[in-house]
Image (cartoon, rainbow, N blue to C red; front, side):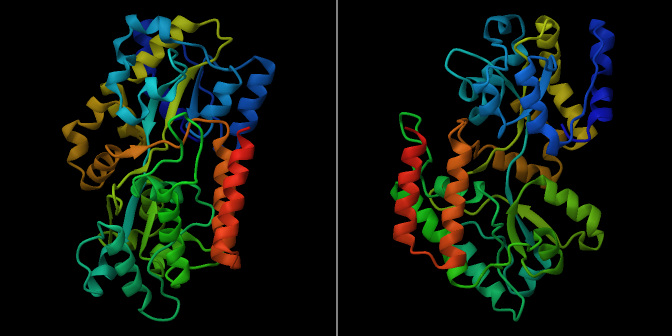
Length: 371
């Protein structure tokens, strides 16, 4: 997915030479992924092997588009569940007793902060707790007109979910159903809304988080590695003036895991060759080579623990955060529920909707969507 086709062709050159299997690589822009996957499922004519973002995984699984690899993995120890990060091991992401996909790349969220601005304000170390995050944001917002302490993207569904996890809760109950009617959810909501109530975050819907960070208007925010790439490319003058840290927490410091998996299309006639490719791609050496080629972090624990990665202080933070990162629910019910949750929070924060009534309506909608 994306614009990584030529780099992926480099990655699999050795595989083709060793196994005498030719690979035709088709790079699909992320904006076209839903359309392509829907068409492939409807026609029954998909790729042998496909990359699947975790946000797309529930729909692809529900459509029956992926082959069950469980009976074939004994001969390929690279695919054993214990080799991957616990939070996204194949036996956690897949229906019981089946293996429909294996982790491919890791992505998580960390705290980005402007070291120069925090230092100017006497805030040497990054905030490590919710209380410190609020205190830092309050002091940073007091710098003057147009200054804020933090940024909450109004489109970011995972951000309040991370707060729920950090409050010690979850968005699913013991039966696997999505349930937001919990004390931890309310604690997370109160924390989330407090930044709006105290004017610590911008309220413009079109506020650009990258430019806000570059200008210093919002010197702290939670984002993924893509922001680091944008800063390096768009604001080289900020080199040495920003850094990343693990997320501030309450009961925990849990972050979002938002990587990609790999699966074999259910109608593929080349299942054994596809399994061989998956085994190759999940080998630690291959995972590290992909990081060198494309900057995407491994999902295999042995590769993440490689000293070469730990030597980079920025990467070290990502790796440490991945040890406490979780994916959103692998459920087709989650996407509409997540959007309704975010809409409810935005109505309270931006339109002054009554919190009690709005949240009660949300909880009823969550129940109705899972009937």
